Amino acid sequence: MSKFEQYLQSHPTDVVIVVDDLASTMAAAIVTKKQAITLAHIAAGTRSFDITMPKEINRLVIDGLSDILFTAGFSNNSIANKEGAELSKVYMVGNILIDNIRYNRERVEGMRLNDIDALAGLPLKEGSYIVFTLNRKALLADQENLEKMLRVLCETAGDLPIIAPLRDSAVQVIMALGLKKNISLHNLHIVKPLNYLQFAYLTSHAQGIVTDSGNVAEEATFNNIPCITLNSYTEHIETVKVGSNVLVGEDAELLRSAFTDMVSGTWKKCGIPDRWDGRSAERIVQILLEHR
Image (cartoon, rainbow, N blue to C red; front, side):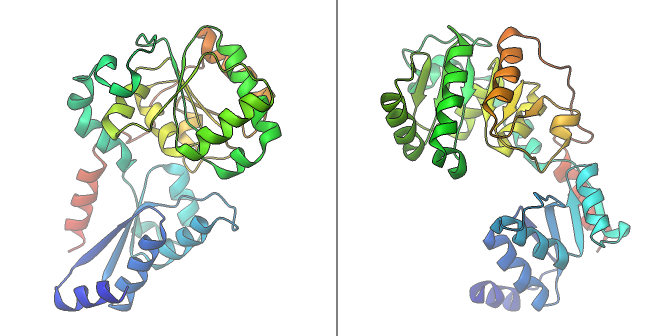
């Protein structure tokens, strides 16, 4: 914070743009306002409504300090307005995450499954596999429930391969649980985490995705890929109301029902939320120019 303060004092600045809800985002926001500089927040208005989450506190502080709020959807606009933000400072520009997909589309589409070394030797065919990611500490810690979920996935998938790019901590928990509880993981193929382009290709050509990541669910909605989220809330409810996302919380039976629909191809009809078109950055730049 001290270094950033020195930077702003020595570099004339019209506006500082901060993104998302990290502690570093909050720190930059605080320094900016202490220097009386206009602050703009991308991905404003996202809330879990769980004040025990550190990121939730970050969001409240950042949005409260911001002069311009750039939101991804109507629900985020509504939250910002309910918390007292003036309509004149809240702009729905769409999800900036989608800009990255659009920007990299040609690079991603130029790939093939056999170009990804981590997938070498796996029986994969485009549109005929499931992608599974798991990272939330709460899910990994509740081994009794995790056992139920793993059984549901592996049993319901049948012969459909499940590709799981996982970090070492998740791999250790899953493999130990499989041995201890005698879970058949024959169709669960654990691979090393992939780079952005590789993972983007893998998910955009899957039959479906099971994840605990909000960002993965947002990308799935844009790519029109069925997605099950292992959480009871999402910061972007548009992915559920309009998009391909379904929330099952941490309930193994809800997972079974949704996963059966995914595997059988009877998923709900879905679309793309308003302004999730990959042009959010253009709108942001235009709005900032108008505020000069």
